[in-house]
Image (cartoon, rainbow, N blue to C red; front, side, top):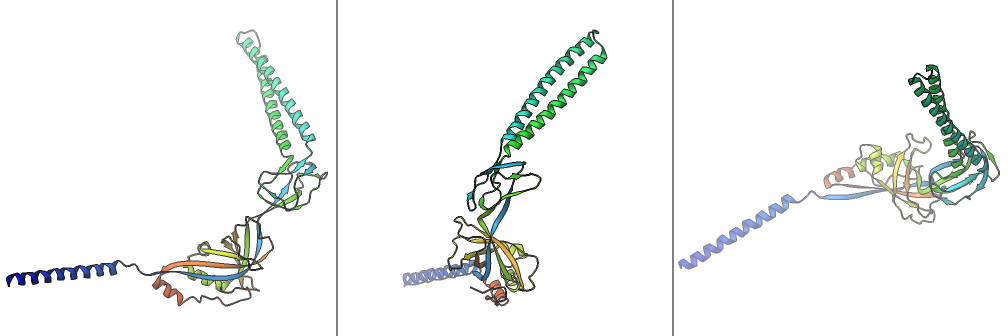
Length: 319
C-alpha cells in the first residue's frame, strides 16, 4: 500500500512539473513574438516622356579648316573617340617653329651662363671689372626668361596640334552634325560642330498631381520630398504596352505647380542599354512606393490615405 501511494505521489509530481514547464514555454513564446509587420505598396500611373540624360555640344578649340568628319548622325561613340580632324599642316609648322625657337633659346642661355661664369671668376681674381661681371649676370637672366617664353610657346603649339583631333567628351549617340569638310571654323566663335546625346541611361519626365504627391509623402512617412523621392521606384510602359525591363528611380521634382494642370514635374532616370527608349517617346510611368511598418502604424495610415488617387487633368490613375 505504501508502495502504491509513493507511485501515485511520484506521478502527480511529474505531471505538475510538466504542466509548469509547458505554461512557461507558452508564456515565453507569446512574450517574444514580434509585433506583426506588413509590407505595403502604393502605385500610381502617370503620363511621361523620354528625354536624353545629357546633351553635349561638340566645338573646336583651334581656328582652322575641318579636314575630315569621322561620324554620322545616330552613330554611338565612346568618350575619347575622334569625331572631326582639322587641317594639321599649319599647326605642325607652328609646332616645328616653336621647337626651333626653344632650341635656340636654350643654346643662348648656355652661352650666357658660360660668359657669366668666366667674368665673375675674372672679377674675383681682380682681373676683370665689376661692371662686366654684373652685365654678364644680367644677360644670363634675360636668356633664362627668353627660354621660359620659348618653352611656353612650344607647349601651346603642341596643345594646338593635339586639339586638331576633336574628340568626344562623353559617351552617347551623335545627334545633329552641322560641320562639313572644308569648312573654316573659328575657336572664338564657339561654333557648334555636332551634338552628342546621352541615351543610356535616359531621363524620364512625368507629371504628378499635387494630391498624389501629398499621398505619397504621407504613405512613405518621409520628412522631406527628397527622402520620399528616394523611396520611389518606377517602371516604364511603351505605347504598345511593352514593359521596359529595367527599373527606374526618381531624382528630383519641379519647385512650382503648373497652374493649368495642377501638377508638378518629376524627373527620374532608367537604364537603356539597348536604346529602346527613344527621346520624345510618350510613355506610361508606373510609380511605386514600398513601405514597411507595423500593423498599428499601418492601420492609422490607412485611415488617412485613399489608395487610389482621384484622376486629374495631369493624367494620374491608380494601378
